[in-house]
Length: 104
Image 1: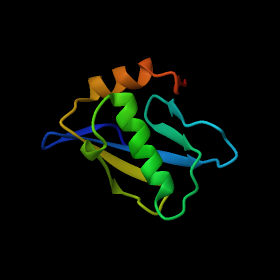
Image 2: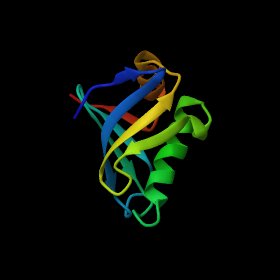
Image 3: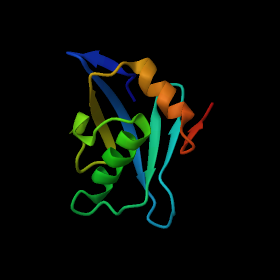
């Protein structure tokens, strides 16, 4: 996985999306060099992608239009872009969230 990148005012992050339709909640696991996002929506017609964007927008307290998947729409490895935010803000907001678990 790649680390966070700052390009033209946008923050990019590559992560693994884990679809667990048997799970009842959205969850994020942050590792030292990557992140896993567990979704409950099935990977059908973009439902899992929409859940990822909506949940991240809520956690980061930003509009969902500021987040998009720039690579991996049909793959479990995705790259998201967040318009206008720094790495420190992203990590601060994610660590404050009850949905996030810090891993070693």
